[in-house]
Amino acid sequence: MSVRGKFRHLPRPRLEIPLFRGLVAPYGDCGIGGCGVPTDEPRQGRNAATAISSACRGFPVSFQPRMPGLLKIFLFVAGALTAGALVAPPVFWAGQALATAGISEWLAGFPFHRVLTRSVQISAIVLLWPAIRWLGVRRLSALNLFPNPVAARDVIFGLVISAGIVAVLALSCLLTGFFVPRADWAWLGLGRITLTAGVVSAIEEFVFRGIILGICLWSFRPVAALVLSTVLFTAVHFLRPARTELAAESVRWWSGFAELGSFVANLPGPALLLFGAASLFAAGWILGDSAWRTKSLWLPFGLHAGWIFSQQTSNLFLQPRGGDALPFLPWTGPSLVSGAVPTGLLPLLALLVTGILVRLYLRYVFRPVSRSAA
Image 1: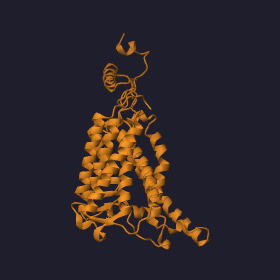
Image 2: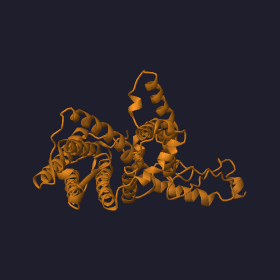
Image 3: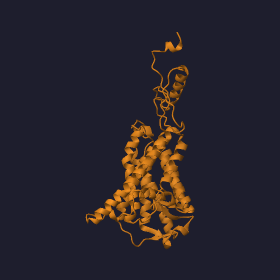
Image 4: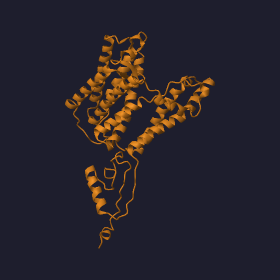
């Protein structure tokens, strides 16, 4: 009896050939995005795939290519931008109509570029859950996230270290004369700053260190995954529309797409761009490394929230001497991204010290107890 007849009663093997092998997620039936052999270990899956493909030559094979996870993320971003650009003009027109009818002038007070920004952000939030399901994420463990038995300690450490070092940086700038106290500040601004720090940190950590870093770890080694996710984190923060004031009668249904073209044109000058990108990359690397080593988002959340709170609080109470911090480069400079990203060598030094303290904490203090899947 031939080999083909001998194994006629066995089910036909199913081999899936992934597109863009370097990008496809390695979570298939065998953990490699390849064969249809169930196994929990990637190495066993690779061996099983080789054995099946060698032993079953001549059998019919069904090719089921799948879309890479990173490509899905880029499509999600494109979808959020497209949806926001389409929604922004009707929302802007609705605000103008409400003001004309005397019902409410609140929405009419927002310029079109603010309406576009909020429309893109809300579209991204609405599309986030369908995107997660489309990516095939059913459990947090698929994104290298597990329950953290010392979550509260991680958050407190992150808040204290990040906020404390930024406070020391602000005090240094005050003593050196780079900054002076503001005369017109209000304590009520602290409430808005606290809410912003909590909400923005939670969203960005879940998206960048949770989803994007987790997807990158499917296909790349940890260092490459950290670099890629950090570069995306840095680039996204510079994508902001130009603050052009469009007259209400000049807004058309395509105005959102026209404003999207100004996202790249709105970049700062070369020196500020370099220092801002360096600060964002250093911060993103610390956050990503913390998430990867703790396998949770609690420590990066505490660090991120502490940075936002302390930096925005410094902006609330201090201002550059003479009203412009640009002459103080390279030591310190204007804050970018709505005042959340400091520039200059002193902020980079503060981030370096923060990174060293975080690594010492992870090496000598952090002791994970549980690694059960979430």
